[in-house]
Image (cartoon, rainbow, N blue to C red; front, side, top):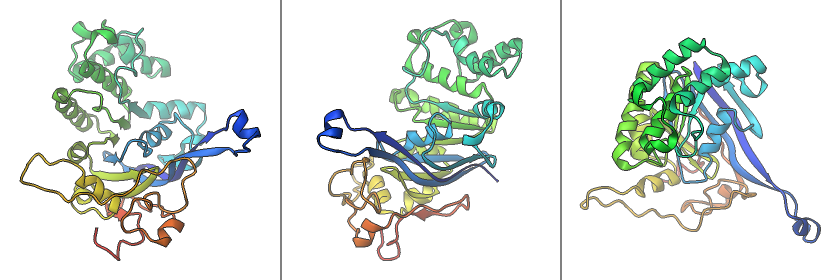
Length: 331
């Protein structure tokens, strides 16, 4: 049974015009459609990767799942319960069950808290354990992420490197013993030299602690290493989803193939076809109806401009793409 399910989830941000635009130019209220009708499920102990260009809605989707942003429409179900309808006590329980690892370790840590207080803050705020047990769990968690409590417990964020700060962020999330972790590009702000260590650490902890994970990244090679399934997003729309290596090796959607062909290959003898992508990325403010990729797609026709296709999928392990012309051409 799926631990998490998103049904036609959308997030629109209202953009109000200024006084001149409103009263002189008579401009109406407009909306940034950051996420539009996204469907997916997450099984127990599964890692779902989400990839796409900057601004495609990956982080917004994670923030809605975490309860940091309310969805404009649709429903998010955790263990068959709508998270927007949880009562106070249930909401506290949900926040202990779902934790987020943010992409910027320089901004996500409170500069006034030392490492020990940072990691212990969550259990203390939600009163999950007695204080003596919180101290023991905090020290054990620091050891699990490779930070000696004797050496790091009293340090502040400015006294640590980026990799050490990200380890503190991981410890802060996992000390709550969550069943689901939302990793929002946890490696993007780190040097290449320490990315492998953090990635191996997260894989090891996922096995040890048996949590499900939504892993957001620009890097398809990272997602190929950690994710069981992969979802591709473009301008708020889910374009494709399926088993990770099936999506990478046999992409169905034109955008997915262009995205994969744009990844450099570290072999001068291997040449990938140049992606046949024209035009600029459409603006998310009041986008035209139909497929979000239509303006740049080499296969688009009139029906693409009229029909918005929602990626209908469940945890059936199958490969799906949001394109009505898949049977007409080979991508």
